[in-house]
Length: 566
Image 1 (spheres, rainbow, N blue to C red):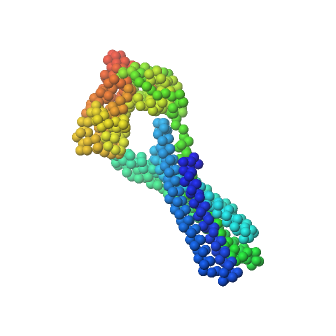
Image 2: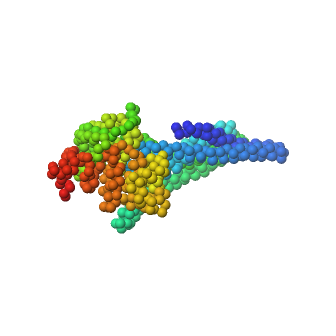
Image 3: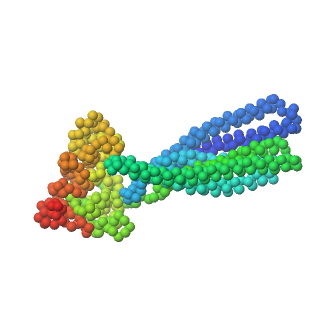
């Protein structure tokens, strides 16, 4: 209901137009009754002027009906599209606020299905829901009132059929509703599987596993087909019940009307009009019943929409959060405890660490020791369980998320390139950057060396996820992004571990330039890249095992020395 608030004027006019269309339908049987009664009473009274006047009246009503219906079909449907767009905008905005944990546990294909396919039916639902119930309800009330003036008993007999019809229809409607939900979920699963397969197409081909992917797709496709079969079965039963009661209603009117006509309790004109009113009444009931199918589709989309909207973001700004001002870059970690699961397994138990502003700190350790976890906790991608992380003495939970992350630059091993040009990907670091600033950032990162040799230069399209670029090229573009952002705190998460020696040399040079004058945290796999760090911290399952410069740790002959000489 809240989504109608911005469009209540359109809805009001839409319902007014619906009222005009109802008037046109209700008046026609009355005109037939009047002509029939006149013809029976005195055929001479059915004159040409009289017939022409009735024809003109009905033609005028039809013109009004056409204009009203045009508004309902055009503006009414567009209102539905506006509501759908508002809901899709809200969902997308909500998804932007969800944490890394949410995306770790949710299939992107399912989210894509909900933000696109699920909301398609909302357009029809949002427009027709109030309109259909209003039209059908008003028609039933008006038809009942007029039919009662003809013969109360026959009216009651006719209307006694409607609850029975609705009971049977509701039974099949519930089956359809359940089938629609299963259908949406099954379609989301197919979307997720297709996305997974196509994004990993190079891995698929490298292992010659096309048949494996086809088998997985076929399994999902068959499951979807099975759900569709159930849906069509419910729809067929739904339509069958509707058609049966349509015929039954006409039989009742003919038999009851014929009897009342024979006993003089119903006029011939009223009998003729009753048949037309029953037709109008049946159309109204049929529209409600048939709309149940659309209602089911729409409500399924709306419910799946609110399943996401009602999922609260795990990490949000508190009421007393502040904006960061001038950031020096001091990072303090006190008694930090954190674990990913609900079990007792913890990545950190009371970790303590001081990183002075402007220092270049390298963090190394075996897989699972918490190197990347630490790099994710500082920008608050995950919420810590206990302890605190301070930036310039301020707890990161008391800093607005946008402000916190604006002051932190991250270069990761797995670089994500957005579909677009090189210029657009670099400008992602600062959407308001000028052409000169973009080129300066590319030059500082060393990316200009290869960009200038491309036929279209900065306007070169990088392809899906940057497939047209090499690993080293993508990495230098990601570094250019961070140069453009110009943050006081820098996190390098194994930024060169996936590169060949030549690319690593070029990227390492860019990273060294980027680190100057910033607080830098280097998560390293290749130890050759951290020799010049101000301090090297070695993590193990217990926390910080060793710390010191390269020379100090070599002289110590501990874990670092062993790792370096393996």
